[in-house]
Image 1 (spheres, rainbow, N blue to C red):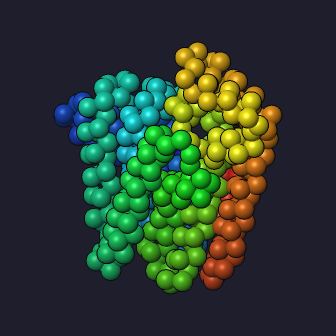
Image 2: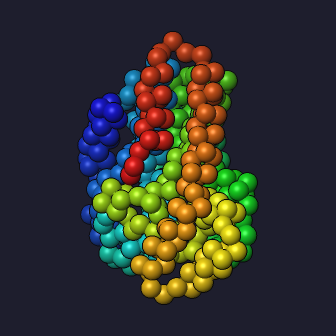
Image 3: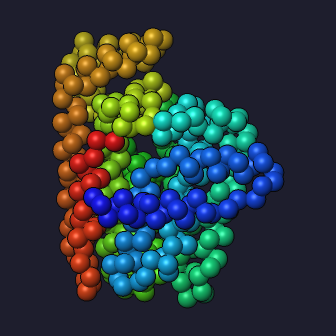
Length: 321
């Protein structure tokens, strides 16, 4: 996936050169720190690819791509606070390195910075960009609230969970792709198909992420393995495990929710997940949404090759980190 590495390197350079004020130090230093933690930069890459698909040069889509990435990092900073996560990409989260109040305010200003990047577009494009961006930002918040609400519920259905990850995670990937298409003056039909490609690919991506959270290799995943289990979060993996488990396993899973020894909690949960083959069931769901994404991608009518988007989708499904 050399082209992804090339795009990621290009975006890393742009983010490194994105300057924040020096004062107040405790407002902006956490942002510089957080952005240097790296990441796959998938959403801004998607934005650039969406623009390229319809003939726009990279520079035209760059402000939109960076806006998407700053917004995404804003959500991560706040998510880490809500989840009480100690690590992000193998490093201390902002609230751990500083404190929760600093993390909240720094995240807020990063959101504002995303809007400032969009100010560079003319009126013709700005309205469409803001309409999509605002809709997406609202939906991401709705998804995050659903995720938190699920923590206080005994049962969450597959459909409810899919709707939550669609809002919390997937719509931002669809948004990134469509924003690229907007700046490239793509038709509404093409924009819609590209958005649906992104949303369904994003659902598949999040299901894969849920699997890797428990079954991934810590050094590759770059965050605390089993974090969802420790937090007793409802994920598709835990939902499928309970649907497939026998009564004895269900009773043990219930006891494990209160287990104070985190190693025991994570390792025993993992054993049950594998025993009932819940990971296999989740991969079937992942494949379903991946196929839906490909159908939408194939509907797009354009003069450019779609190879890079096909490669991106393969990478997201086959990754192990």
